[in-house]
Image (cartoon, rainbow, N blue to C red; front, top):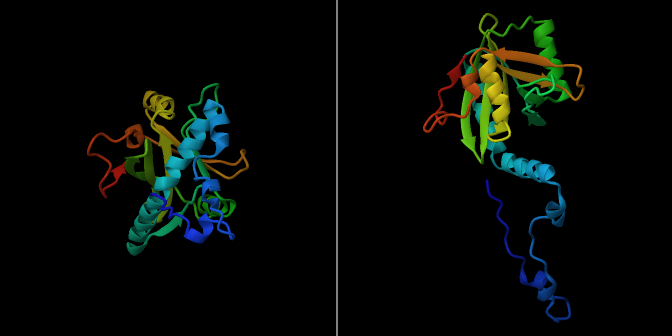
Length: 212
């Protein structure tokens, strides 16, 4: 997604007294603070910018997938993450896709699990790549109750390499959904980590999901 920037009109380019203030107009560019950022922060800033460029398309894909399930008679919970991380578990911590969920949507997820006895028995993963990212719409399915939980996620191809290597070694991938409260987390374990690896050329760009 690109942002169109139209040039300012003439009255914005000159001062009221006609002394030609156009020379004083600064062209918009990257914030000066970017050059002063430590390398790690600069990488994070760059990734956020790349995600914002494609995120609307990912959300549209999730909404279209949700409509298909609803049209088939399923109950659907759509999750709208505030952030997604890809920890590799170094030092004994959590590894996999760590998805920050709004409080109200996390409460709905907990209700599905604790009250409606939602039991995950299959996942479908829609993959694509863009801007150096691997992008997903993940559908967590309970066929017995016909309930689907959908959420988008992503990771940077380079920064997520260690996480993917860990998943391949373990023979499983993990997705963690949580609110800001770090103590509450819902973890789904996917038996086929290849569903989350970068798609090969020509793979992952269609409408058919990978199943696991």
